[in-house]
Length: 311
Image (tube, rainbow, N blue to C red; front, side, top):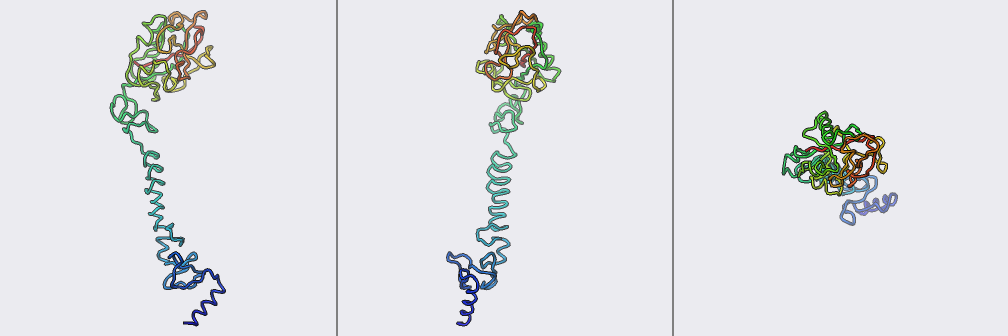
């Protein structure tokens, strides 16, 4: 009716002209009709956040009236909200594509047996050999333990056999399995590690499981270790040598060359603690070739630990 149109026009002039529209029309883009203060919404629609909207739909589809589903269960909780981008939707939450808890490896669950050493695993050979790497991704009985002794000695070890006995005694006291020999060399190649050690095809590891070499060939290739041999039989840092330093680093008695052969100084075949006798030493804090041949010439009355290897 003409009178109703006049009333609407006058009322709109007192409000915002931009918000006045035919109550039966929609926005220019087909969206909801703009409104001001609850005015001119047809039927059961209400003026919510500046638009004529169904109040029922607001509770479950679009709680702020902007039409894009940010509300509780519209396209939010479970659309792209709580479990959409959250709990198990596309991975921004708990079970997604890896940004969450056990998605593709960024979260809690790991895949022991997938052939990849994931965080928290010591090894993973795809369950190929349980005696090398167990199904729990821990080192098995075929691996070889190596450690630095927790005790210091002069160059008088009682010979190479005396060094072996010291290694075995400390391993036994620490509850380590197997037979142990000292990494010692002399001018006699028959007593060098390269000759008398078992040459294992399996990894050499520290007592905490850190791998230092993949096998014997890797251990003695002269290119160094995967990680420094720098823990004692109890898994603790070993004591520093006393009176012997090699480029300001603590050392270990060795008497070997970088490939585990003999030929280095040896404190008269490891029977002398005289200061006029000398020996070759390795630098235990390094993973380079200097781990077993770092310096030569320290006096045999000084104190240093030994390297010990399971056979």
